[in-house]
Image (cartoon, rainbow, N blue to C red; front, side, top):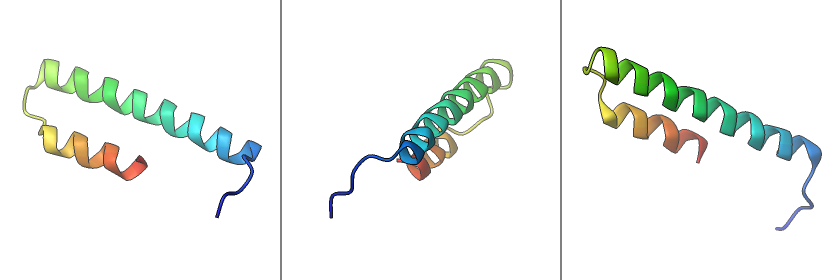
Length: 50
């Protein structure tokens, strides 16, 4: 079932991309200063949006 691209879906994709970018940045900072964050948690978080 192929539906036409709606503005809402585009906005959602941009929102999702922005959130994942911020999350990636947050994990990078966390790893840099604490080095105790598990990479598995990061990948499981990204998998939710994909």
